[in-house]
Length: 326
Ligand code: PBG
Ligand code: ZN
Image 1: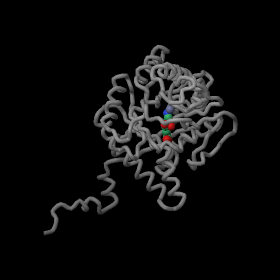
Image 2: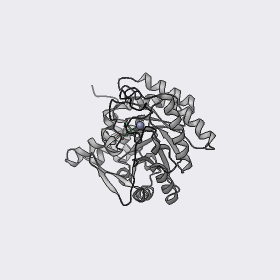
Image 3: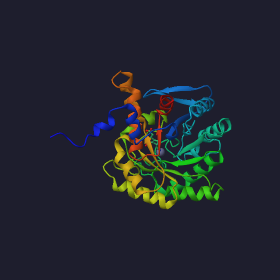
Image 4: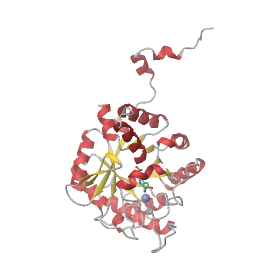
C-alpha cells in the first residue's frame, strides 16, 4: 500500500516551504540585556558569557545606539552598584546606576524602549532578592518589607525615564505593590512586565557572574519556583494578572517551553520568554568549539520559543540574531 497522505508534498520546494511556514521570528521580537557598571570607558567581558560585557554608562549608551540601529525595539538594564547594603540603597537611589543609565539611554536614543529589572539582589551585600534582617544567615527573605523597597525602586526607575518596570524577585504581591507605587507617583502609564513564572534554576549561573549577584549563603528556593512544578506557574500568573501585570514572563525558556505554552493558553497578556545566561553560554561554548552551527542553533531555538507561545524573547543573542535576520 502506498500512502495517500504525503506531507512531504509540501516540503518539496523552498518556496512551498516558505508558504506553509507557521512561525516567523523577527527583530521586533527581541530584547537585549545590558549590564551597567560604574566608571567610564569600561567594557569588561564576562568570562562565562563570551560576547557579553559589563559596560560603564557611556558604553551602555554606545551599545544602545547600536542595538537601536539593528532594529531591536528594547533593552533591559541591570546594574552593578559601587556599594551593596542591607537596604539595597543602590536599587532605589535616584542616582543609582540603573537610574543614571536609563536617563542616559533615553536622552541618547529616545525611541529605544528601556525596560528595567526591578530587584534587589545586585544591591544587597548578601545577594538575595529581598530584605533580610541584618545578621540573618538563614536567608529568610522578608516578603512585605521587600515590597516597600521594590515600590521605591520602581518609582525611582520610572522617574529616571524607564519605559517598562520588570520586577524579577518573585515576592508575593510585588505587582500590586509596584502598581500602587507607580500610580501614586503619577506613572499610571508605565507598564509592568512581571517575571511571573521564574524558576530556581542553575541556568542563571553565568548571569550571577555578570551581575555580581550570587547569593552569599543559601539559595533562592524560598522565593523562586521548583522546576518540578507547572501548576504553580499558573497560580503565579493568575495572581500577577489580578494584581495588574501588563505582560508576563517565563524564565528560563529552553527547559521550560511547556510553561511558555501553558502561560500563553492561560492568559491574554503578551508573554515574554527569557533565554537566560546559561542557555546562552552553553550555545556559545559549543559554537566556539566548532561543535554546533551557532546561527542555525540560535535561530532554531528562537523559533521554538515563538512556536511555544512567546511574543517576545529576552536574549543575549539578540544583536547576532538581528544581524542574521538582516
Ligand atoms: C534575579 C535575576 C536573575 C536573572 C535576572 N534577574 C536570576 C537569579 O540570579 O536568580 C537571570 C538572568 C539570566 O540568567 O540571564 N533577580
Ligand atoms: Zn533578584
